[in-house]
Length: 144
Image (cartoon, rainbow, N blue to C red):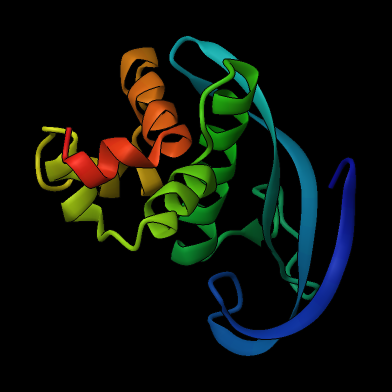
């Protein structure tokens, strides 16, 4: 595996060997196409030290797969000067609001903030609105 660092050994169910054993957790530079451009990000996954095949011996669990996608989306956000998913969480928590409450406050659908925090990349207009809320508590107190 190119440009990887073995992070630690963990016990996992291996999809190659079809049994539970110690596998290596890796970290590597990766690239993913998002909105028509390739974005560099840090990918994490697992490698089977037993299986050696032409198809490879690495995989990501479901949880790790979604964490990798979030890292790629956040790299896109950073590149385009948008708030990252964790920055959106921080804004919401700053005011003690649930995802639904912040969505409703901003006049968005009930799950919009949840999507911005987990998978959807906000547009510039939504990003600007979130930044206004972050910098001006009176907007939250007044309920817009």
